Amino acid sequence: MLLMKELPKEAKGKIYLSALKLFAAKGFKNTSVLEIVESAHVSKTTFYQQFSSKEALVVALCQDLIDEIALEIKRAAMLEPRVAYKAFAGIYRYLDICFTNPAVAHFILLESVGISEEVETVRREAMQGFADLIFVFAYQEFPNQVREEEIRIVSQAMVGAVNEVVIRNVSEANQDLDIEELARLLNRLIIGAFVNLSNNH
Image 1: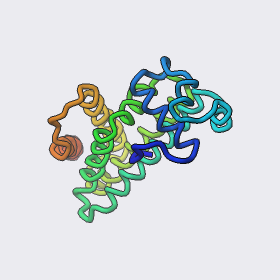
Image 2 (image 1 turned 90 degrees about the vertical axis):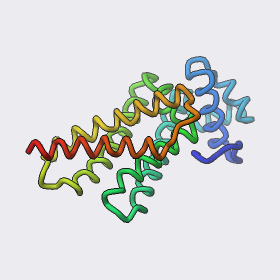
Image 3 (image 1 turned 135 degrees about the vertical axis):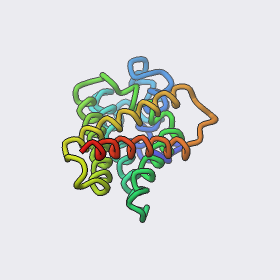
């Protein structure tokens, strides 16, 4: 899904890609099912065979995109052999996805907010999943110096900080952005927070 630029052959993929583009351009509320099916070149019947409503489409789209992003982040981190660089690799991959696919970042971080309790549950679980990844890397680095609960709290805060940076830069369409430098800066921020915690114990 993240790498799709053209309409795929299967109906669900066509609907996903068309909806994502329309939600990014017009917003969820201003996009109708009719517009989605016309853009996807499928019938309304086909749409309702896949999804019970526009809200159900958002839940499924959000879940699939988040699962794909999480897999990419984990893969990038696991491919990095040096433990100290695993968090950087994960952050870099996340930023790369967001800035290469601004419609995806806009949809997940902005447009899907407040649509329904079900979408919010998907988003909260995703952010917790990203925080859990940071927790794992931090716990490997600071297993005895920092209490587990403190690592969890800081990990959650760092996800919020990273997403705020993404939102600001995607919204402003910052063309001069150096993703690698930004990833290094955010990684230093995260490591610094844990070092500061460990020094206080």
